[in-house]
Length: 249
Image (tube, rainbow, N blue to C red):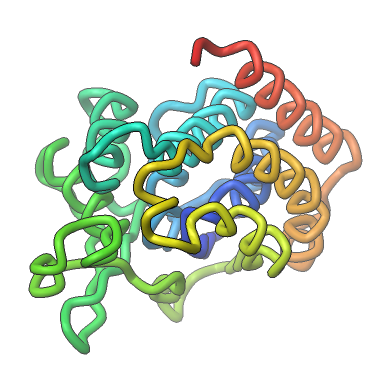
């Protein structure tokens, strides 16, 4: 069965949503579904690009999601988060990522009062730029002047076309996950200079385990999910967590 998947944005919720993408990856590997396209924005675009281009295993996709979140919350540097995002995405994507993602990764932006989407990428650099633009929050993750260009799609991506065979809309994270991952960055000075990555990763791993159950509810409306697929997804989360715990700081 072909499905279109709507993946919400938001860095603090990306790992919660990642468990839903992981479940779909396991369903694809079992031959039960084919994800025709991901419709996403903000940090969700990083996650979906990883799932399409550089996730030989589900655990590796989840590990990269955790690594991205930790990098975004690491304030042991003085540059904007946008630069960290660009460096992370550039290092992650293979040379032919733009070919793989064309028509399968649909990214939403805001430009003034208008909503825009892009789904075709002529070069790898164009894909990297689109992902970085969709993560941009002018004055927060990038200079305020960037408000004049493309920037964050405000969590909600544009919906799939009306002729989509089946649509799976992954849930937004619960308030407790967003608040707990955001607490260290409430005050601007603390957000800019404190290293919050360890706190964020611990909460993120907890959120991923909860996210599997919420994602299962949504996916099961479209396709039957065998118990062994759910167990493989949970095992992948555990492997990703162990990999991050043993990774070099």
